[in-house]
Amino acid sequence: MTRTLEPHLVERFRDVVGGDNVLLEPDAMASYAIDWTGRFKGEPLAVVRPADSAQVSAVVAQCKDSGIAIVPQGGNTGLVGGGVALSGEVVVSLRRLSWIVDVDPKGGQLTVGAGTSIADVRAAASLAGWDYGVDLGSRDSATMGGTIATNAGGLQVLRHGPTRAQLLGVEAVLGTGSTVAHLGGLLKDNTGYDLGGLLCGSEGTLGVVTAARVRLVPPAPERVVALLAFSTAGAAVDAALLLRRGLPDVQALEFFLEAGLALVCEVTGMRPPFAEFHPAYLLVEVAAQHDPMVATSEVLESIDSVSDVAVAVDAQRRAQLWRYREGHTEAINTLGAPHKLDVTLPLPVLADFIDEIPRVVSGADERARTWLFGHAADGNVHVNITGVGSDDMTVDDRVLVFAAGLGGSISAEHGIGVAKRPWLHLNRSVTEIATFRALKKALDPAGILNPHVLLPPL
Ligand code: FAD
Ligand code: MLT
Ligand code: ZN
Image (cartoon, rainbow, N blue to C red; front, side, top):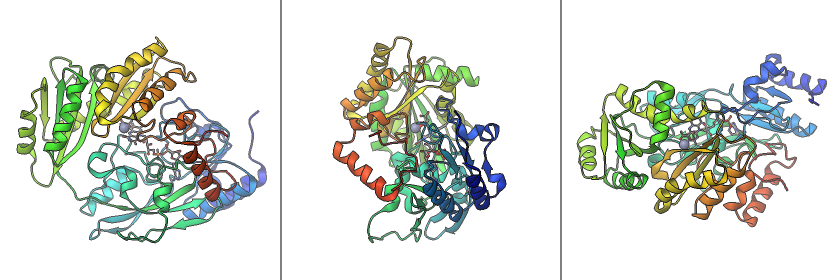
């Protein structure tokens, strides 16, 4: 039976956020109810859209008093089912908190509302003569709050680190309804616990992030992008190491395989990059203050294992090469909602994992098709599996156990969400999980913040 929000709570939420910002009808809530892949579909009790942190605080306090669970939601581009109301929670959408203030061009910092898209943060940074260190394919929709909640990685981790490395402080509403804020932006500030660092990666389970102070990085406007083809994944992984070591200005080192490239070309209508397909590809971006072409060419020429190469300098051609890599997520989704298993491996076993994992998957389910791509320098493989039922977790189990057995992590950058919480124990000890629960109890004593995410049920 579908639950409905009690009338006095509807009125209370309307008083706080305004009538237009309390959504109750299924049609109005539809885009908030289903995740980007289409795999996770919830039935929210309501969608509430506060406009500032005071409104977030009032909404959270009311939910705590009424014992109503909340799912915080940003751009709804998350890939582990953590941002949709799978158990009839209230979705608190942060998208209206979209603003950027206190841009400090001298210090290279800015303060940003949780609902601001990463594309807008990057544009504001650029206007101030800087850049923002995180970039990802979902940049137009993914929000600052969502990327903090998931500690998003993306395409430049190699150079600038993940979202956590950009944070100078956050403002967040805890499960009690009270607000913690530390947005001064001091570069050195050893005055106690790093609450921003704790909230980063907490997937909406400890607090609702409302704003952040982030560091900016120097711009690197001169760019070269090269697409390299190899006869084996191992050769691509080895080349990534040489490129990383030989080019201090390397910004991205991304890999994909023959089948994924063929699918991207089929779905998008793009022409393949080379006359022939090759088993493995590496996309390299070098970004510097001064033209990096000479240095890049020298290192590329020293790598004997390259079977084919395309180099792009002008913006249009660079974007074209990037589309072969960034097009994977959408192209795979056209085959039906995939199981998305985002793992990291120690670099010495990365190539073995890439070679072995399709057999591990087909051994678990012969209908399954495996697609592999990811962030080579980070050891981060996106194992996407199509052709198996949404609720059949056999392949998930095999992949995650295999990755953890090789010393890897079951979540490189997307988080645990609901999709992977049964496997958290593969990476976290009993004591660590108990400590996580104690932290949750302290920050969210009523257990209303994303209660079905990250931590396994007791
Ligand atoms: P949502 O999807 O809305 O939420 C994600 C999680 O954060 C949920 O658990 C939610 O409850 C919580 N949350 C959201 N906002 C808040 C808040 N203000 N306070 C507290 N909790 C909150 N991810 C990467 O790491 N690297 C990539 O390269 C990458 N590329 C992508 C490419 C595509 C095409 C797509 C569709 C996704 C990609 N992602 C990537 C995944 C996704 O974009 C990230 O996980 C992103 O950080 C989610 O941001 P969001 O605003 O959409 O959050
Ligand atoms: C990527 O690197 O493209 C993203 O993390 C999205 C995905 O895994 O599909
Ligand atoms: Zn990724």
